[in-house]
Image 1 (tube, rainbow, N blue to C red):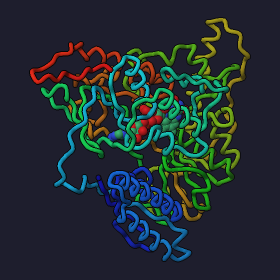
Image 2: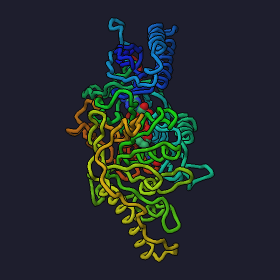
Image 3: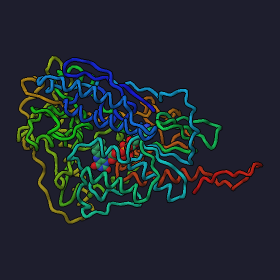
Image 4: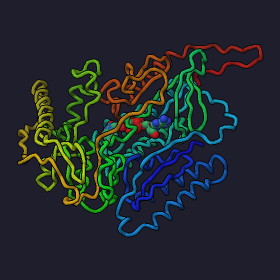
Length: 537
Ligand SMILES: Cc1cc2nc3c(=O)[nH]c(=O)nc-3n(C[C@H](O)[C@H](O)[C@H](O)COP(=O)(O)OP(=O)(O)OC[C@H]3O[C@@H](n4cnc5c(N)ncnc54)[C@H](O)[C@@H]3O)c2cc1C
C-alpha cells in the first residue's frame, strides 16, 4: 500500500515525523496549514482510522503502525500545557512513498475500454453518456463520489447558481425549489443520487498516480498506475476537476504561530476557529461568503478585498442568472467569447444563494462593523500589510454589477419585456482612508482564512498535452493525444463547463468522440479459439 510521512510541529515546539499507511491524510490535512489542537486531533483520528481500515480491507487485519501513531499523537497532545493548547499545530511537510513490498509480484493490469478518472459530477456525466451508448467503462475515484462537495466546502455552503441549472444528463434537478440554492448536504445527495440512480460503475479509493501512453500496444494503449494496482484502457477521460492544491502565499510561514491559518477548502464554521477576530483574505465567491458567514455569527471580521467582480442576485423582478440565460450567455462557446482565452482565468462574481439568495455588498457589511482593506501583500513581525486598493476594488466590483444590470436593461428594452423598474445602485458607504497595515495582536486576530483559490495539478498526466503552466491543452476537451480527454475545466467549451449547468453537454460531446474512435470490430477467433472482447457491452 502507498504510505506517507507527515511532519508536524506541536505548540511546544516539538517537530515530529508521523506515519500513515495511506495517502488519506491529504484529505484531512494540508501542507503549510495550522490547526487548532482539537481540530488537528479530530482530523488525524479520522484519517488514521480510515488508513488502518484500508489496511484491514486489503490484508484482513488493521494497521498497528497507524494506530500506534495515533496513540503517540494523543500522548503528545495530552502533555501540552493549557497555554500551549490554545496555540495551533502546524503541518510542515508531506513525504509520500510508493507501496512498501517491492518484492511482491505485481498483479496483472485490469483492462477497460474507457477509464474515467474522478467521480465528481463531470466524471459521472461522462459515465452516464457512455452507458447510453453501450460503451464499457470504469470510473476510478481516489476518495469517494462527490468528494469535493463533501470535504472541501464549509458547513453553510450553498450553490450560487439556482437549482434549475443543475442539469446532469438524465438527471435534472427534480426537487421542489428550482429557483432555490441547494445546501452542501443536498448537493452531495444530488451527485451521489446520480451515481446510485444509474448504478454508474465507480471504484472508490483508487487514486491514479500516473497516466502514460504506450503507443503501439493497442488495445491497452493507456496505462494508469494507481494506489490499487495497474489499469489499462483504450481511451481515458480525466475528470479530476481543477481545484487540486490550496493556494497559500509564501509569507504564511511568517505568521505568528499562535494564529490558526486555514485555506477556504478547510474552513468549516465559525466555531471551529479560535476565539478572537478573523482576517479573511480574498473576495472571490469563497472569501465573500466565508466573511459573511463569520460576520453573521457575530465574529469581528477583517477582510482583504481583492479585485473580484460582483453581480446582483435579483434584478428587475428575476434572478440575474435567469436573465443571463435568456440572453444566451451560458451557451456562448469560448471561441465566440469576446475575451476568448482570458475568460478562463477570471475570478467568479461574488453573490450568494444563502437564505434564498441575496447580494453580497461589502459596503453594507462595512457599515455593520466589518473592517475592509485592499489586497494582503505580506505578514511580517506580526503586522499585515495591504495594497492601498480598497476603493479601487470596491468600485471595480460595483462597476461590473451595474454593467450587468445595464445589459439586462438593454435586453428588456429590445425585447419589449414587461419588468419592474429598479433604481440605480447608490454605494451606501465609502472608505474614508486606505488602511495599509494591521497589527494582528492588537486587533486580536486568532485566525486567518486564505481564500485565494486553488492551483491545478495534472503532473501525473504524462502524454504531452499540458501547456508550460501545466494546464491541459485541448479543443472542447479533446487533446492531441488520440483517445485522451479532459472534462470539468472552466470554460472547456462554455461558461457552464466547470459547473452543473454545462457539464452534461460536454460529456455528451466527449462520449460521441469516444464512440467515433471505437471502430467496429467483428468477433474474430484466433487459432486458440479465444475471441476478442467486445468493446461495447
Ligand atoms: C467554492 C466553490 C463554489 C462553487 N459553486 C458552484 C455553484 O454554485 N454552481 C456550480 O454549478 N458550480 C460551482 N462550483 C464549481 C463546480 O461545480 C465544482 O468545482 C465541482 O466540484 C466540479 O466538478 P468536477 O466533477 O469537475 O470536479 P470535482 O468535483 O473536483 O471531482 C473530481 C474528483 O476527482 C477525484 N480525483 C482527483 N484526482 C484524482 C486522481 N488522480 N485519481 C482518482 N481520482 C481523483 C477527486 O477525489 C474528486 O472526487 C463551485 C466550486 C467551488 C470551488
